[in-house]
Image 1 (tube, chains in turn red, orange):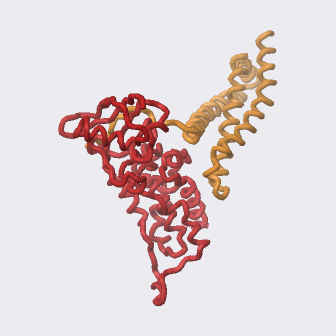
Image 2 (cartoon, chains in turn green, blue):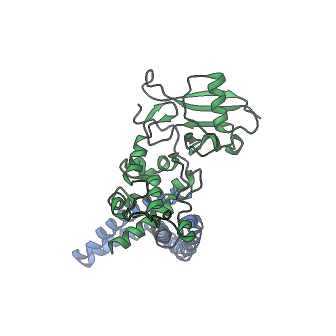
Image 3 (cartoon, chains in turn blue, yellow):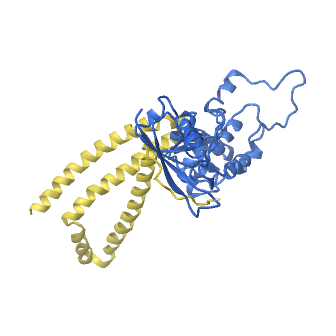
Length: 235
Length: 129
């Protein structure tokens, strides 16, 4: 492969007032992902580079970052697919930066907790079997349950950049995952957070979340479905 | 912690975000136009002479050209608005928003040509006289 230039956002809270860009140049091996390149830098060129990673299989959601101006998972982004040998890597925007590419995900999780992301039941479970669901009802959750909480969607959302109280595409997708679950009885518990000016009504259908999602989910569809559900609830 | 990290590079644009920013810009232009329109029309209270005086200004060639821009602004805002309504109210339409954008913009461009070409001819006529 050709020589690549990696322009990486660096910020050390003990030394730096603000962030800066540091460049690394080397020739990656064929088939490398952005995460492979970051590992190469950390292990061979600069051990101080800090980033999150875990599974390298696109399922843990740790390595969400902004790669050449678009959010994605470092482990799923092939260098050859970027179409350039200059790769700019930044931390997920919209969240405070702790160090280098590591951001504080607490604001993201706070939004998730606000919609109570777990099955809420009021009726006692059947004594002889589990809470069953028909295949049709189960199918309604496709495209809603696969989220890996990487934060790429909420971090890409201009509405979230402008309104930090906005629940964001991730929390609203998760809300849809439970509100459209036939076994769930938590509508009343979630409605105040979801049916709010910082909830479903804040979304401006910009579709950045859909472009960013590494699992190819569609949070915008979930949000418009929730809006219809909230309207029916009011009528 | 760095609460406000500097934005090194603008986030990548794509059809959804471009459609949204143009919707915002055309919306603001229409608000500006409506204020101007109401200001011009309110001169009717000053009688025929005062009204004709203002109208003679806004019938100058430059305004005829701007009117073609106004037509484009109205058509974009209206038809992208239709796209947003389809995304909001039709079942499972959000995944097809790009195709819907193509369809509504094809209609908008057709209407722009139908309206804009005669308006441009009118402009050329006004310039040559």
